[in-house]
Length: 432
Image (cartoon, rainbow, N blue to C red):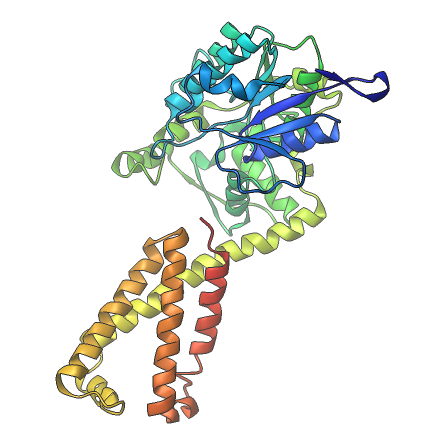
């Protein structure tokens, strides 16, 4: 551990695992602001983060042995583990990420003599835990207590951050005209701002008398519906309208199609997510920020634009898909085939060639409509590019062979222009 200049507090070199997540990023910023030196532990380094930023690539799905971690701990004074997943996907499963790899990490910390360790867990990962998420987190917490007695298990409730995926989902739910909530949103939560979570981590690392466990919660419990109402108010909306759906109905949907509704998540929500805020207040030196102050005016203004785009981009995506699907249906026979063949004759297509162009184009339109609804990420972006290419091709052919359509009072060709603009916007904002 290196000493700060002028005999001040020690300057720590801190390995922050999960530094590409909401909590990890914010912890890195807070450490830098406090004069410490974070080392960002992430899965895939992309060269971002600014000049002089230290980083190390890690993979919690596979780095399950202490020997994987000892080289990474050389020159490290403290460790923050903010890696976690809420749902399993492919190789990203609870057991290695929440239990096996943290156990290996903490064993390596013990061997390297690192006692300043903060494990970011979750409120509810205790002896009453029933979900796989909470039980796996509890296993990782137990490993820390067994191998690094000086470490701290930090257990946040719902964590809010303007850039957080779950926070934006909740804000979108709050911003919609009607919030559909299980049980009417009566579940108890105690949300905490991510900046307060990061401040707690920094104070825990700096102090030599760390608690074994600390609940990171907001100033007081409130219902989920009340929380969403406060977010809606911060975003400039009026009273939240709630439609309650019995949790049992959603649980049955989870049994029929678990990818849509997670039964364990519903059970965790029903259990509640609250704790005494006295310890968090003590370590912060002030009360945690209340939800009504989670958003600044500037953040709220930016988020209103973002949330509006989230809603209207979904509407635009559905609209684009419907254009292709309805066009396909019309070409496949809803519109008189003779009329379609007459149009194709104007561009020089007759007989078998005309039928091939008509039905081949219809199947292509059908494929593009389905792709617009079903695909995501890079595959969807490629589908958008194919749509742009097809529209430009149709427009060029019609311009040459049927130029009168540009002057048609219903504007059938002019409507391609807003269609191209919408597809371009959807392409530009589609994220993996």
